Length: 409
Image 1 (cartoon, helix red, strand yellow):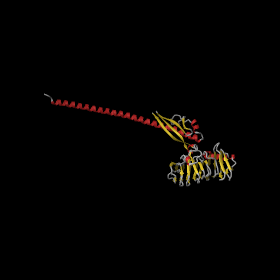
Image 2: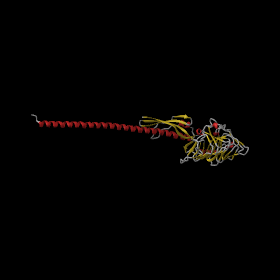
Image 3: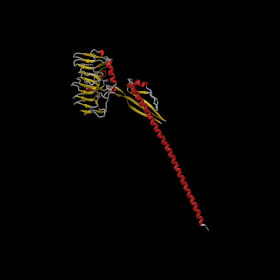
Image 4: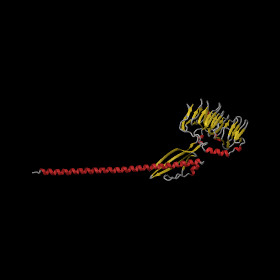
């Protein structure tokens, strides 16, 4: 006969042992899974740490490459400011990294446009990362407008203003010669008379605080907003470049080569005929009688007038229209300037402190930079503005033309 209690006791012990085994297996499984999670997490953390380090190295390499570019920019601008040509600066330039910065020595440059655009590459390093940054720099334009008045630029009614390229067509005579680039501008106020013919854009500048210039009579014109325009790019004020040159001209000049200059003044009388050839002349006054003739012979080089005083320039006759830079007038005083030739004339006038009034009765061509500029041609007068000034006068400032970079791990 079966012992029921014994069987039940044995079954009970077997059941408890099996349950304990299942529990142990379950715990061991969970420990295994958690271990796998730990291994995966550790691997993931390690990968993220390496990625973070790589990103940090690449960022540092990029900054190091950029530092090399910035040092090159500063060195080239300094060389240009000292009077060297761009080619001369680049030919001897070698830039090495300062302490704490890691980039390869930079001593190779590619000229893209002579005296204007060049390319430089900088290789920055950090850890195992490398970034090559390549930049094309170009020299900024010194003059952004062909005619400019800091506080005012105005015209009379029925004025005709055309643009032209003096390098292609040095003797414009009609509207068909216009290239559509008669650029005019002001930082404060622009006032156009009625029936204006302006073949080019209007630069509506801004004062030093950023307030845009007013523009009266501008309906229908092409308007551009370049922001604040530098009112004295040649440095006539604040001990700038022209200030120093003016001082030098007052001491050493070519006044002695022309008998028409007396005590640093050029004053003509009716019937006088005066010719100026290549040279630098320092004048404290210019008064030209309407019945006198002033010829500018720039066949051997430019004629440059450095004037510290008033100018009343109304010759009856003059040189044939030519390159405006063949006849340059630099005025640093605030005395008024009147320019109104009866016949064709080409000139470059820079007077950032003066009120300049243009009243031609023929074709007046060139560029005009003033504190106040009034363009008031008479019935037969036409003003042609030379657009090449923006390409021929380059500043010592470099701006980015194009850029790109390559990264290596």
